[in-house]
Length: 358
Ligand code: PMV
Image 1 (cartoon, helix red, strand yellow):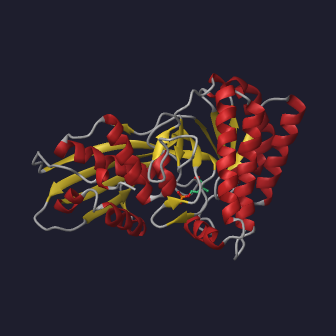
Image 2 (cartoon, helix red, strand yellow; image 1 turned 60 degrees about the vertical axis):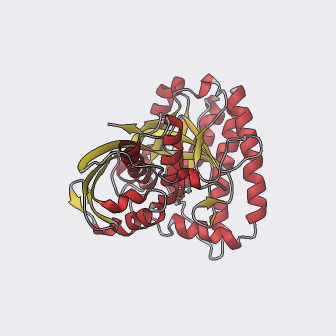
Image 3 (cartoon, protein in one colour; image 1 turned 90 degrees about the horizontal axis):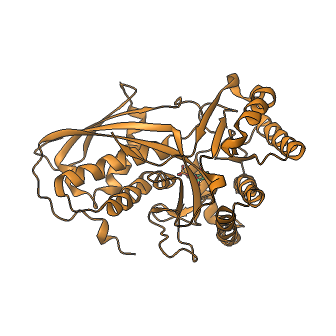
């Protein structure tokens, strides 16, 4: 793997201080990444929809200093957040060999999420991709040597070192991360915009996120990924995810919504099946997660409206559907599903275009 191309080349500009602000979205995987090796190399390729309304805005304020070390302070919604510092420290330590100029500055990181911190929606994808993009923008100010494509690749590459799925938040509407034989530009070390002609039925796809359970998950994603290393289905899972990727690409090109739905739901249930068959085993779904899934199946069967669900590593349910069906699905959600959400909470989101410099 050629990692040299991700190292900062020349620094031309002396910059004392300044600030950069980026807004970056979360994403929802359709083909799930579950299991990794080395430093954030996925065991299988994954595909996601980039989201829009669930996002993080980060301002990176930098000030030149004389010492040569990593130095930062972190604020979340204006308050100092020490418990998030280890994750940010780990990010800086992993990326420093690619962006050594970081050692010459003291950073203040101000970050806010549009979604509630304790809503059970992971903020690592949006948070890490926002921070990584700020770092790449600073590099661009210092050196101005990268094309737009190189900037995106590097932002995705650095994001991945912060949190694997974060590398899929830089672009939209759909991103592929992980080597796949049918797409030669695909890579294990960064995400790429899915290089296919996506059928227009997927334009402006909606994602209503039903908050079944707020708060900290019982088992973190990092622990879940780790358990895949000795999982009985590890080898088979790689083959399965790669095959499903081929199938979903074909459904995305042709507009075969029923084919799409089948793979998306299979993937969601497979993700949780792997958790339930890990050693030690665990369950992140809740009774209300299953009630919602059954209601979605009943509704789809009785109306033929192409709505489906997916899950991330938690109890919450993402309801995915084309914008044309917004009205009947809004009614269905209000009447039949919100009663299963904690405090009736949900987030209306849709497919978006990725990170923005503000
Ligand atoms: O990026 P992580 O380590 O938080 O892992 C994310 C894993 C899933 O959300 C369950 C699946 C995925 O592909 O995003």
